[in-house]
Image (tube, rainbow, N blue to C red; front, top):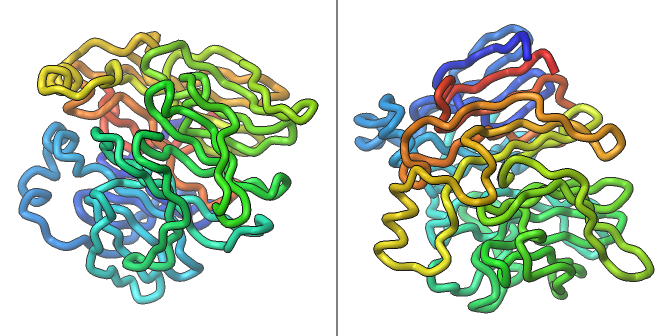
Length: 368
């Protein structure tokens, strides 16, 4: 792949327009203009001794998870940020940042989704709780109104799921699809209707139904599996004669946590990660944190970038090799995408994590 712009130590967080991206670097937020290749400083997060001492050292930053920041638009003038297990609000006009508010259960929402125009649902931002649920307690789906105001709209009972991976609004079917993991009995695709008053399983009980990334397509739901344990696939969930069925479209090289809509197709990336923890113990947790051995569903030690569509097929267009540090302790090898804000982006932007080259750098791929 040719014509790559490398932004060293920057994390691409959120598209604010087709050419401007919110960036994070060492406790600070910037606005980056892709066309002009220029940065504008916006604000800084609250001072932290830990970040001051370790934020500039890549391995410590990865170890302490200092290189994570998610964002979504609350409205046209306010951005909701998830940073250091805290919610923040950033005012774009005043360029001011609120004080942080704790995320419930110390979770870090894997995806925050905007529901808009789905019959039977209140418009707004929603997320499913995503946390280390070792004792299989209850897990909730919540609606966000502000950085310090939210409400529970649905709760999975204890011993039902591990956590929520993603929510997918579906206007045509007047529902919101809920994707859960992680063990076989916890992994599934659920259908929520009427403001989450009814949430019913559609496909559950297999790694084939474990997914983080999914898109609404004319044929049904395009999704990609996320299993360290088994071979992973691009799949299609579709309805035929009143029954939901799954068709495997294409085998891929590993589990998928991150993906995005891009031009007239879709892209997603595989992760390099160890085998799942099936039963919690000190020995098993140490194994997970310190092992250099990948899970059975991870075909090689590279994060692969796939690009394409159901019509044209999917191609492996880029890959980045995982570095030699333990993936549980120092983060999975991964390629992460900024939130596109439903914009029709023309340049593919990704952030590399735990890779031999360009670790913790944002890359702008101009050649695809």
